[in-house]
Amino acid sequence: MRPLIGISCCVKPFGPTGMPNHAASDHYVRVVLGPVGGMPVLLPAAGEDVSRELLSRLDGLLLTGSRSNVCPVYYDGPCHAEGTPEDPARDATTLPLIRAAVSEGVPLLAICRGFQELNVALGGSLDQRIQDLDGRMDHSTPSDQTLSRVKTGKAHPVRVAPGSGLARLWAGLDYDPLAVPVNSLHNQGVARAAPRLRPEAWAPDGTIEAASIDGAPGFAVGVQWHPEYDWERDALSRRIFDRFGEAALSFAARRAAGGGFALPAAAE
Ligand SMILES: N[C@@H](CCC(=O)NCCCC(=O)O)C(=O)O
Image (cartoon, rainbow, N blue to C red; front, top):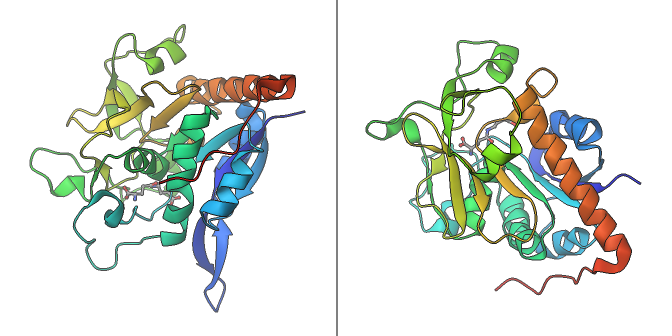
């Protein structure tokens, strides 16, 4: 049996009436069916009760990227500029879900918005438009390139901390840890790192690009870039999903062997 991997959904308007739909990009479904080796389960952004009950049946949690920003109320930040997309239903679902997954050791991989959620869920804060800050780069989606180029092209290098979880995850691959090229499709970035967020990779302007979670009982990795776009040709991207899948498989095996999984206590 393949491990069950929950994929976080957004609420997005669809069709001529703008009917709210629960949605996740096909890239996440394909990567779970591909290198992760799991069975994808779309997690509706239907609030904490639903997600906590679902978590007790999952072997892994994939927190997806999405255009919307985490509502600043969750990190005491200033209101967003008018027109900034938000997704309150997703926030209400994923933030408690992340805390529960980390405390229960459910393997977790957080990508882009998911990485930002991970930091906020654990008590960190975000900058809303890092391109407006002195000395920082523009990490946003380039408007002068085709979508395919944006996804698979590399926008800037990241430097990986020697001996970090990410460095261990990539052990044996041929790459330069001082300059790993990544794509970039975000405006926000980690401002104050959550107490348990352990930064492991940085862009040249100091933006935190990857992290793990101190003391997490299971695999817990977050990246600000999008490895799901190019895992078919990029060995570093692929390895992230291989290892996440292995962690989910052993979590499933431990649970089947009676390792136990208590429904996490209600979040404060
Ligand atoms: N709020 C974030 C969004 C970052 C992010 O996840 N971008 C990916 C968009 C891809 C998609 O549309 O699915 C920010 O701007 O920082």
